[in-house]
Image (tube, rainbow, N blue to C red; front, side, top):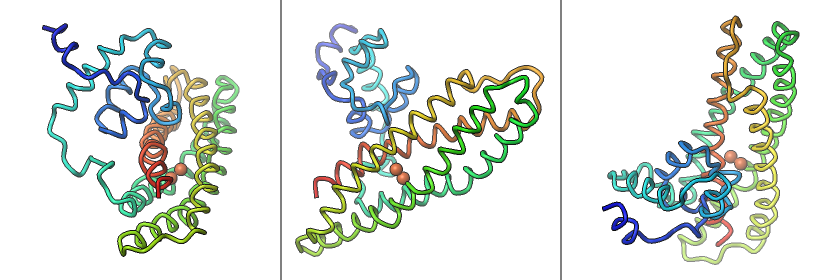
Length: 243
Ligand SMILES: [Fe+2]
Ligand SMILES: [Fe+2]
């Protein structure tokens, strides 16, 4: 039975992990389950990623097919959204999350570094890395909100009106995308270093509530960032580059 299913299923193992998630966001849940990075490290073909992790690509694809057989609401089908709408969604959901939480997490991290730093030197290192992420993100979000996203919207509006987008706007997209991609990689690496230092956000014995909340918030921050960078790297940016 299983063999028959595998034989009938199209082999998508040459597609990248990021493309598979862009095709259907529900694939992300399967990749998350197996610790497969679908945002910053999403450029590898599924076959290569599975080989590195000792996983069977056919079994992973079967799990993806299973989650995809659930009905999909248009609300989750980001790839079908207009680019201007997707850009607004990213700002209203993920940039808002960062604006509301980054400063608070940084303050919590500084507090636990002061109180627990002697026994848990990793929290001192985590605080330094997080402060750098917070500073880098401020400039990154500003570039997206003030330069890239308005340019994407102008190009979108020009195309909808049947006009040719301005050449200057196309140049802006190319230069901005390259820079923002590199920043995603650097921020993603820094977040992974925090995950590693915190031993996957495992809470040590005998620490205060602020410590617990900080680790929970750091995990939430990473989860939100993965979704955010996925929408930009795998859907918004490639579509904007095609304009
Ligand atoms: Fe963003
Ligand atoms: Fe970004």
